[in-house]
Image (cartoon, rainbow, N blue to C red; front, side):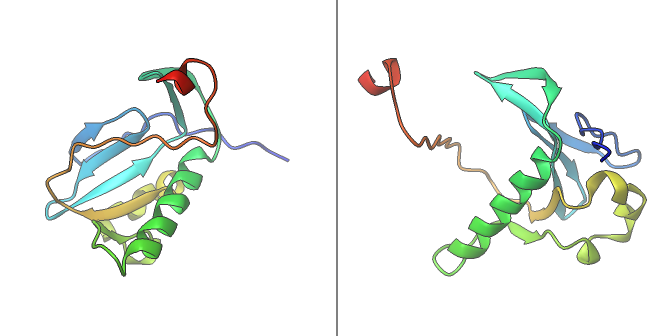
Length: 127
């Protein structure tokens, strides 16, 4: 079995990069944004040089599940993760993007970060 090359960084010629985060690259599509989940790993706000193959695909599927699951309760920014609904300008990047991207609405973000853990031990428990 051949292990795929992990996606560490995207380079989509002709598409303006809006922001590069610890794990996701965001491109401006005009009225919408393209969020690409890469295979980068971050630890304590540091991006590590190694990647986990398919991590971006898993993150995108998890996000899509929760956006779908909570949509009856609250609106969200996700428009689609279905490649067939993506703009024609992205078709040239299908090998790199398919399964790890979502097209979203442009919104003003709520500056909130939440970390969910299965258990706490050591200094985390004291805090």
